[in-house]
Image (cartoon, rainbow, N blue to C red):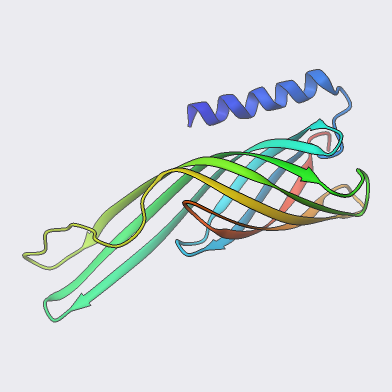
Length: 176
């Protein structure tokens, strides 16, 4: 978490130092998504580093309960997944357009915790299902629509080595 915050502040400092007025794609992003492991909630930032290229950082969190029933009883696990990632995107349309289409690459680390919440006597508590943490790579593609007040609505899909998801959100310009 500390490294993520340092990266986020470094990106924001770089952006403010290099472009006092702010770049065309400098945003704070918030939203929700869908994935096979719960509903991720996320917050992040992106800054313009070249004419149509942004870099950013994102923090996400999600939980999912999983239940197994047998004639001996019920077992329930709760998975908590925290993600810290950095991304780079290329924006295909010119800055200032009403629509924006982009694609890019993300690399992140996912902290995955599985806890036993309910079990029957004699159950060893070992989780044998899928899901683990670690470093993940993913590709993403998205589209954005700018409202008259400068706020942006966007949707994004992505897939990779640890998690795949779709996200919708709202972006606020850093110079809002």
